[in-house]
Length: 114
Length: 501
Image (cartoon, rainbow over all chains, first blue to last red):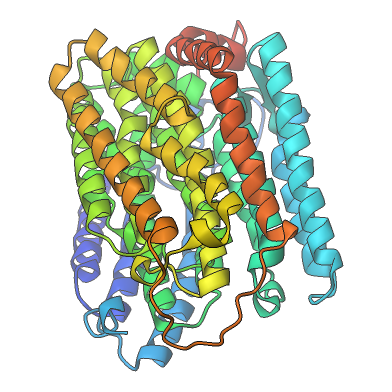
């Protein structure tokens, strides 16, 4: 399972970075989204995947291998929320850029041509 | 309890500012009160840290490696004081420099949000929490930058947003890998367990990831291009806020994380950092000389001088680190002042293009003399603070046997002097070119407009006058930074179970 998640994270990083190197703002934003999702999966798999165990101590005396580590899950939750807010903001910003420049190609909206 | 105030006061102020009617004068009063409140809290923290050593607050009463810890050592305390000083000046400058329309869009509240994020980043003792504060500060600054509608400003904002988000993704990646291996993200706990758990490959990869993430934020050499592409477009007060604070947060985070996690001065990452710092100085100043716009010259100078603030970490001696910290303090004050000065030009001449400026010395000798202080302090003219900071940075280089680097720094200082002298000559000294559209009356420079600049210039002069105690303070700060055990003891106490894993 870790191997699969590692491959998925790698693919997400690669596609994200590739898209960020393109010239269109829409692709850049999609790339950012993929990149942040890739890092979420990376956190999950780096911290160790546990199968069918809740991150809860249900009764006293549970040992550490009987529940999942809650911290990576809360880290990812926080990162997802932040990533979502940032993504929404950059979408609005890209819309404004598109509205004012009439294009979403970085080369045509460059500051030198204003 | 004291430690949470620099975060809580701007938060409450921002909320109150949103509740007030958006076009009232009371906004300004509340915003200024908030900034002054942060300043009071910061000074109180500083005095407490001076007297009692490292201060720790376990938020929510959760013991150290499990909850989030706020830590103030001397470095954090000094930086928070600087944040509040810049905050007060920028809030003051906004009174005259910002149009009412922008003010109605939550401008003052956003400034408070940025202050909160920066103060949080300086005070936190938890790596993931540092990432969160970075995001808070970035979102605030994103919106501040894109509150405007011109195409150049939107484009600049997009460059800024894209590259900073990339840096955040790198930081998050590094944090995830670090947690996977170490099982904790509390900085003090990491400093304790990381030497046992690290593997040499992971150590190198992580240090490079952190270097890249913080390097983008700080504006180090191959990663700085977003900075001069964006800092010259927002209003001067916003420029001063971003230039003074945001890059320095990157430098702070770099120093904090590397002193705690990678305490091996021979590691290849420090050689790399040394090379990057040197290249940053050279490339930044070369860029500054080629520019024709007051604010772009300042942006490139900002980049170039970041090299001076990271070089101390690369050399890894208390003296070198102290020099870099002194340089950070001096540079925060001076570069913010100069960005505020560019606001005066915007107000008077509606441009910061050097080719269209001139004649300020003849028209307003007092203002020109005032600006001379930050201008030549940045250039490092004795006896101003820049000279003292440069001596504090270059001296340890020679002490460490880095003669080439010392030579580069001195040449770069000459380039700075050239660049600043050019600003002075073009903007203040030469006769102004005939205005294209005559009969545009110049608005007067009132006391409100000048007060923040005067305030910061007085502080720069103050930094020069009490340079002795300040350098002694930065030396103690550097020694405290290099003494990891004291930090770990202060945060974790004596008997602490290892983090559950």
